[in-house]
Length: 188
Image 1: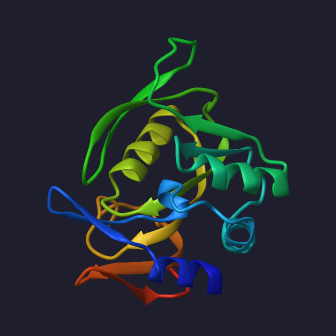
Image 2: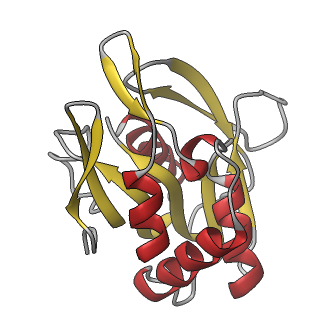
């Protein structure tokens, strides 16, 4: 993970309402996402995630889309995007997403009871987004084969006291205005 590691070490830090946030191509689209970095990440995801008999990749808009698209192109697994806009289509399920800096309603379609899914996201920080997604998938009756976030920010999160294990590619912390690599291999 040389490119991912270096890109995180080079990431600028901003502060929003007391929350220290790294600005990164995977999580923010800034600076631009180089194909070599995305390719490295996708290869690691494919090697790390449980993909056997997965029917769908489930990802939140917007920053999970590019990662999931690249994984879909390599695995031929279709993508379901959880979005912030309600359409009122049959089978639409609402979920409430709460992060360290925002709260939103999100909506999911095209996941049905018994579907085997991979949940894929850019960053695990507070765990609010992934918690809302896994709760909604449980409510639907989907079988969550695996949950993977590319980057994990150190600290407690909403999934710590649940049965949901989240795999990550790299774990970081923000200390004194810099990104610090906590675990270059992430969580299994």
